[in-house]
Image (cartoon, rainbow, N blue to C red; front, side):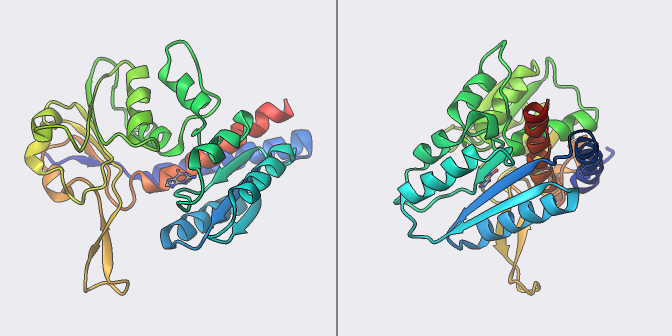
Length: 293
Ligand code: GUN
């Protein structure tokens, strides 16, 4: 059997970033203003710091104005709410992102609810998620990683309508919204999670499998329906003494096994990862357009 076509998330993300850079330039020429994104980081947690740095750099690369607030781990909820309120009121800011997770003493829901709906480029506000889940409504913003997954399927020519889709994982950030997006595209969607008996049997029925459960290489080759499209959202560090860092990243799917059965598959790294920040930039530009027009 032929092996899967590998979906090159980096190349697709680079192509979309060129399109976004052109849009930013056109907005600059038409309105004399550029889109602005505020990125708020609380504390110094390793991977959060890395993601925030990448988001700020991506803005700079595309001509999007970046606003940064770094707060100490012990910041009060009141002070964080004040930062959000100031960005809500700042008309040069079109998107506000508070990097998650937040420290335990802060009520995450209260912070996410405080972000203006019009600036919720992460798509985490319950009103945006609610609209995503409902038929006949369009959210102002769709969460970045789920939107990136759909973009990879669309740009690879994978048909969604009428297909069986299985989403492994039910997080607010990925599993839940990606399931709604796929259902909105007329897939028949099953959500498999940590309490689902026999996940293998359900995954084996998937024409489209999205793995977002955070378990390194949980999905083996014999979980994959021959010809399926596999989107692997997992980014799990596992020990690797041959690396300077001491670890390497693997997905939720055993890639070398799965690529022998799938028709399309995303690698880790270089699959979904590069798309997430690109969708954030895209949401920020969409928001600025709505504000300028
Ligand atoms: N933490 C992990 N993923 C995300 C994301 O997409 N946005 C934010 N704000 N925090 C995250």
